[in-house]
Length: 158
Image (cartoon, rainbow, N blue to C red; front, side, top):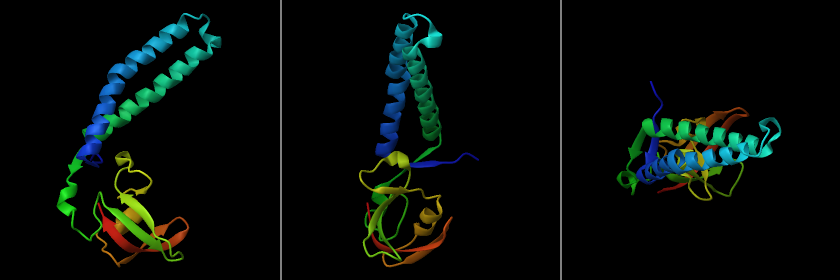
């Protein structure tokens, strides 16, 4: 069974636009760079050619990644949980670690959502799984490579 990628509509639209740009303008630009570099001569010692081929490989990797995400995407509706005090996919949550007083802010969802200046925690990670369904004031724990960790949910928002 394919892994689903839960995205907001805005993230889905942004990734679709990026994919369309890479498969059109991006491929044309990289083909021009490769052609220009080929005209410089010996390809075995041509740094411009090697750089253009490396850029092409990275771009094609991103195209494959975006294609897979969009093919398996499920759009979530953030308005359904607008007044919820429960952590759900797409929530911004502030937590405190057991050994610290200063809260940290996290976004529970896909890194492809790219929220600004906030940590992202995958809902499939141990921390993400522990937070999903938790409410303000709940203390949750999860196993990490360094042992059991505990956090308290301070706030939940969108």
